[in-house]
Length: 434
Image (cartoon, rainbow, N blue to C red; front, top):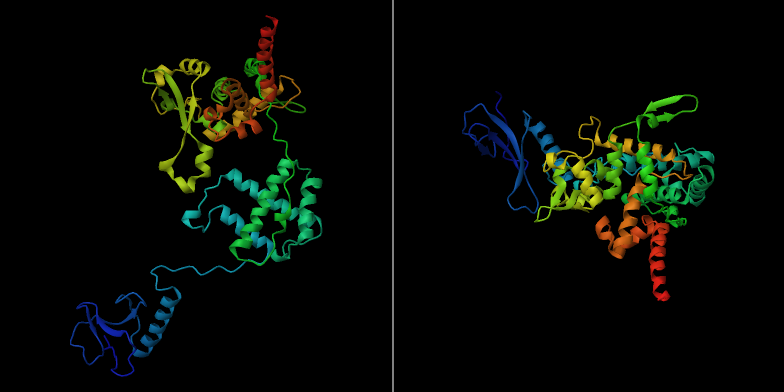
């Protein structure tokens, strides 16, 4: 091996000859006593403000001139990366085009390249909503002659915002609720790009006011409707109607159980399909107390703040109908097992079962010919309404809502409540007859 040279004069500070076998440093080649064949150039760079700490590197150079160049490159790399062991990614270049900004925002929603504390784990459904809203954004611009492939983000102006406003209300004919939801997602897109890249640009979408929404489809399923609907759950009534021919059958033998669980628990679809036998809790006397199930909506919304260990369990109070149903389904046989209460034998995923429940309920309800369109979620409204009639303004504790305003705005069927009050008022009238 050629002897490495390192002069006393003009030596780069921090550059040494180093024996990999003896682990000894030499300031110049004259001082070398080692006869090992393991000598290399080694460069030590002091870390500013870190005491005696250094960063070192064995160089691949075999002569002093190459070592000099390699030392400068290593020091420059350390300085650029703030002397970190891992490479710190430099600030990404600001996107200019509208289309690039859309891709950047969608990547953020998918948690791509997002810092750990900002990961939101959004569902596919949520991502599709945003993706659709941004497509509408682009369609509105194209409809008015704007080439979105060359449009700069900062060229989006108030007039273009008006194009989007008109497109959603006139072209798509969105309801006020759909308009508000879509516009909120567009506002978030604009705000994200402006904030992330610190743009001196006005978010014109922020000026668009929400349109008034009737908080109310609080219509619930009546017991008469529910009873008749259960009678319709047969293989014969499960053929999907098509225009010119009969479609496939959607029948499942567990539909009645699903609908009953929906009414007797007031649970959302995901809660109903994921109820388990070991979620049944008893009193100290061994009687039914309540059902526990993951509070999916709350836990999903607060995943970043809580983590898996702090998940909130939703407590569903027991009523006689629910108790009888659980015993009928085999409580004594399955108690304390980690088995699903609904359709444990079903090979389909729980997500697929959720979809089937939605389709089936709407299918059978349509056959009632009431002139209304009610869905599985209306069972939840019936449950909340019944609780309110009995418990009054404490009903939210049983439904798992923070306050009564949510129940009044979205769940309680005011017609049912008025009928209950009418009957109570008739009793009051008997007092005056005495």
